Image 1 (tube, rainbow, N blue to C red):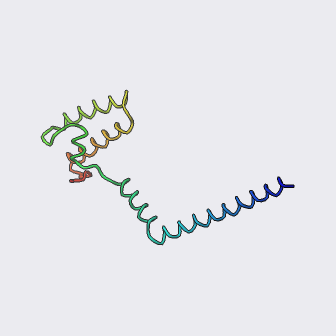
Image 2 (tube, one colour):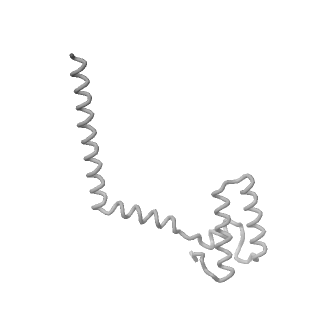
Image 3 (cartoon, rainbow, N blue to C red):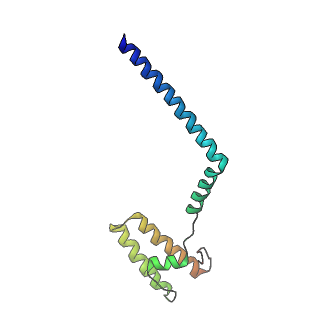
Length: 116
């Protein structure tokens, strides 16, 4: 008999606790949306994704200067890209590729690089 009462108390207590947690979570979401926190978080995430590599950053990644010719940039790119393909990381390889794209846009006049 005592085990049955104890089991009922545990079930009832966990039900009350679960509903209180759910209510608190809903209230936190409502407060966040009312304060604009969720919109700000979404906007910050979108800004990070759409961030354009600067020309200075691209030159730093490839290890070239403003006086470096396009042929030398391509050689540096191919060397770094191949090294990262063999035993590097995909992240570094993609950074090298984006740096080449950025400088290519600068050299061809398409201007996709940011001038920061």
